[in-house]
Image (cartoon, rainbow, N blue to C red; front, side, top):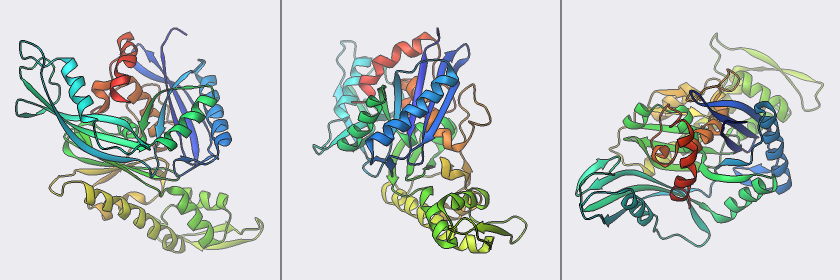
Length: 408
């Protein structure tokens, strides 16, 4: 295969998904998608090594078969309640005689911003430059070549628990793959679903998975706050199963079909099988609503509370974008609009070629975003909108160089 390949691996609580893209004539194109049930993950954390390895192997093998290529390196999504984020600032003096900011100065100031008080059991996953300041002039996106003697950077730093990260990487390695990079999942999802205009104006991205809900808040083009809450769509399935006294499989089907129980043409009734699989009973959308809506409200309010606590109150946010498997819940968008008081849309991946209707679904946003994030390089990492990053051989030649700078 003459084309270079990039592979994203989203090891979720419900499913593991691998996406393979090649560098085609018009930029990146998806050529393979594979998924398998995740049985070894809980709330973004490995609880069974062997089961997780099997899921990774199965998903990757299916993607390879569809793509007709062999994958050895993958960009791995990471999430979980162990993720923390902070913003830090650093300053260095420029070193060239002509007082011109060089790429080396930029690397030095970003490295300086990574010096934070970090416990021994935590490590930096990302250090994303938000903006630079040159001799007091704020808001500079790319300072290289500018005249100045003092270079400052504001950096968004994302850290994770070393134990949790090591276990994920161990599974990837034992599945016969090498991790080309670790990406916090909502950053990947935002790469696939958000417009650059939205990131400028201010947007909240909620990536609702099976076991976790990831949050990323963007303003002026870059991430200013990221977090994870350990609640996802699976808890809704459990609630429906308990409330309607039916199996988890039946509850999952009810969730997918009727969602929050908001019927467009008034109240509806539907049949649900009992726990024994033989008896049935009639249930109304009103009964379903009484089970689902309180849990949805609780999850959204938890996310909102995190944002209010950590994002400056004077920051203007334009809208909320919901993605991940949980975004497919019928009736979710109006509830989110009510909670946040902002226009809300479902984020589907569309920033890359080769997408079929089957893959243009919110549950694939993270895996597709991992491919985009992996290919875009350091300069696009904190700002990418709807574009596939640079194309051609230069794109892949750069991956090895920026990786050391972007991830520790």
